[in-house]
Length: 320
Image (cartoon, rainbow, N blue to C red; front, top):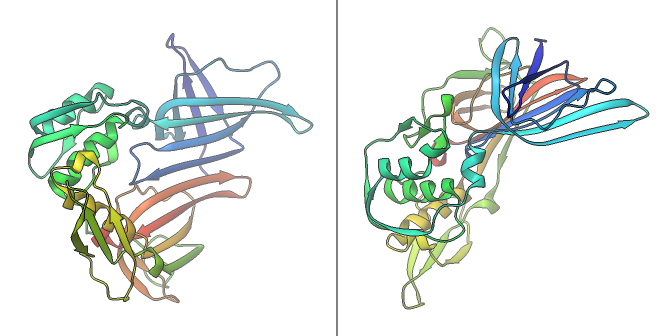
């Protein structure tokens, strides 16, 4: 196993090194702009660190996490002294900060990005094209990320995600597999310790009725992904304020979120997989069959006295 080290930074620019963690968990998902880290180290007597601002985690010299400290906890018991750090990547700032309530007229994707995301250190944006919205309302209580996500959903039919290098991406997710996950003899790929494949019929919504400006549920929508499992599950929806001028976009967003749970797979891999939420992988499990290309929706790396392993949660590309 490669050496794991961490560097804490303080407001005055000083750093504090930590090494040989007892346990760690690093989680990234497509549904959140922030990667989260929880890591525990042994603590020497009288060496309690001060309040840290930043945290960087390295595996074998390669940086696998960079962000801000949210919480530090030190404790002592019969087993000794320990120190736990909870941190999130820069995307956590987009969740923590509330957007200014206002109404935009003819605002473009680039303008919204510069107003709501760039102030928090994001400088790279990948979109199919620069769209504009005639009227776009930011209601009270929305985070900066929720505002940008709502705009992208109504403009592009998909929500943004944070890619490698903190790039804000609205492009379609890749469909070409980055790696293959298989235990078949003679085939190259990432080996797994455990896999499971789940079909969840109860996740699907078959029909929605949208409320109009008069208060009537007059707009009937059928599942745009089809209903091959013959589900009967109806929802009455009041479109959110940011979708007032395009209520169908809100309906599609909710259909997609429900459909995402209909077919999922999970793979537990030994070690560090080096994958990122949004990556495409080819699943060929042998005993369970060939699932084909799937999208990494969640990626969690865990370290403990049992070793290190990566757990992937995968969805079908069509609704990722």
